[in-house]
Length: 363
Image 1 (cartoon, one colour):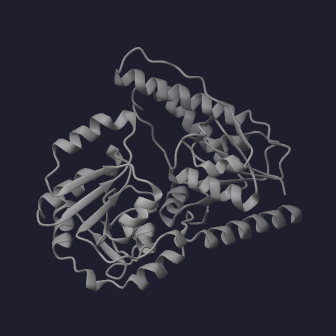
Image 2: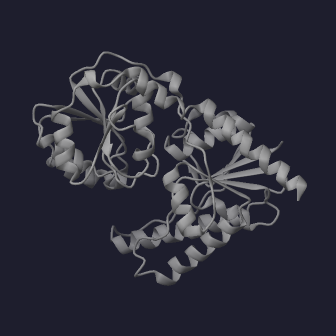
Image 3: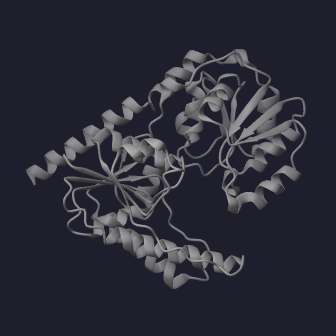
């Protein structure tokens, strides 16, 4: 079965890229995208045929926010157009994964089409200023979603959002985690936080919580993109001495940090799924997170971690100060992580594709 996997861009190691790579592995697929930076993307993508259709690069004359949002709008509009115009009729199966990629379904030759949804975006920045554009983008998004043969999503959280917004059902297939690469180690003297250094992750919650727990140490790991450098500098200025930033680390270093942490901290209430708690549990460590979003699906309260309610800062600080490593069994954490393994992901995706093929033959 000749398969194409479609992804918005291949320019890093994020969750969307991990899923696209896993899908390429399962079906030995070709990969279609807009931007492909081989030196920045996972090197394993070099094993597959990658067809990039680059977006035009527009240079801005200033840092004015309106100009930035206008540029973003142009890039997204062009991306949608490029995906709509991709001729994938030579493939038996098309799997799209990403915000703009579902536009491939509007090309009548591009079917059967399965779409993997990472998150539902039903509003756009500066909508009040660009209302005609945002209305158009939302209509095209709705139209494309209606043309997709099968919708798959990364969590029950997103399944519910799809039902509410698109009025369609979706199959839940959790993102794959390579459980085997993580290991348990004796706890050190630090808690660990892993995420991109971006405003959406609400790292301020962690900073303020550890300010209230000055005897506890927090190590924060995560890359800082160029656009988020001002935000990162602002964070550092507000950071108490019991918090350390390590920036970007290697995969091997991250495995060691997980292994010897006491627990892992997460604070973004809008996390659609959240792969970090799974990596923590695969390392035999509990995760302490806000009681919201995808965290509610992965963390078993009191058994593989702690879910804190509002007010997040005060309750997270209380949980940190009262944390006892002996309250958690590493084997319970490992067992919970197993349901998000690469093997489970592969089996579920294959089952869905087989069912889709049978249904199309019957029809």
